[in-house]
Amino acid sequence: MWPEAPEKNERDGSGGVIIAYCDGGSRGNPGPAGYGVHIEDAKGNSIGELSEYVGKKTNNFAEYSGLLAALQFAIDHGYHRLKVVSDSELMVKQIKGQYRVNSPELRPLYEEAKRRIARLDSFQIQHVLREKNRQADRLANEAMDRGMGRGTGLGTPAGPRPEKVLRGFVKGGVVHFLEGELPDGVFVRITPERG
Image 1 (cartoon, rainbow, N blue to C red):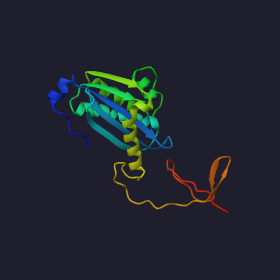
Image 2: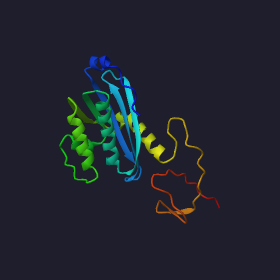
Image 3: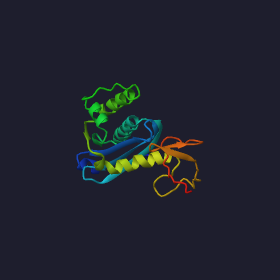
Image 4: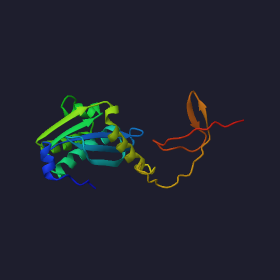
């Protein structure tokens, strides 16, 4: 569900430009993946947040999914000028035409992004370091948490998770399980046995 857009005269007062901070992530690459987008007007006021789990995908797939969501938000809400800020150097350089898109998984996403960009009056995309993209990173992590059944990250837990105990040993700094396994992306707490 998209947040409500501000009234048209508010958008026109800032030149109609919005800034979308986009991030995507994957725990396992490929693994449980999601994106987050924090959207501000030209004055720095928050006007929307998008966050969605996209399934077992690569980090780059999740990054492109965030870009597509930001573009669709702009189109749906009548914003004709969009600036995207992302910490994905690969995606930024591909959109700018500095890198080719060779991945068959990313090619359709890239082409759809280009179609949506063409519907805008102006579009910019900028690469920043991860520290400058914290809000979008938080939203992407919340999406991955939701997809993995860990709650929303918004203070509403998915319910109690029983602790699973697996026995194993460490060799060369790597944990080897004696029985059972864990899915990719699961965080664990390791407790050494005494005795």
